[in-house]
Length: 125
Image (cartoon, rainbow, N blue to C red; front, side, top):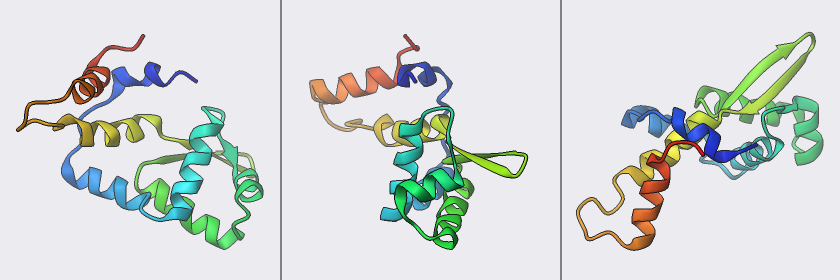
C-alpha cells in the first residue's frame, strides 16, 4: 500500500465534515480500530479479525465500527455473510490535509511546515 498513491484524490473538507470525521475517531478504542484497519491495507479485515486482534466484545466493536463508518473513516463491504471493513484512506488523508492546509498561514512558516504543506499538495509519485 503506497500512501502517496492516494494523495492526488484528496479533496478539501467542509468544517462540518471534518468535525464529524474527528469526532468519529475521538475515542481511544475507535482510534485503535481505525489504525488496525489502516495497517491492514486495502484488503481490509472481517469483523471477526478485528475482534480477534483488539479483544473488544462484539457489541462494543459493532458500536465503534458504526461510529467510524458514519464518520466516513471506514468503508464496509458485505461479501455473502461476511462484512469486510476497510480504512477510507481518501477521507483520512482529507482530515490530515484539513489540519495542515492552514499551517502557519499567518506566520513565517518553518521549513518543516513548508515541507508538510508541499507534500500534501504534490501529485502522487
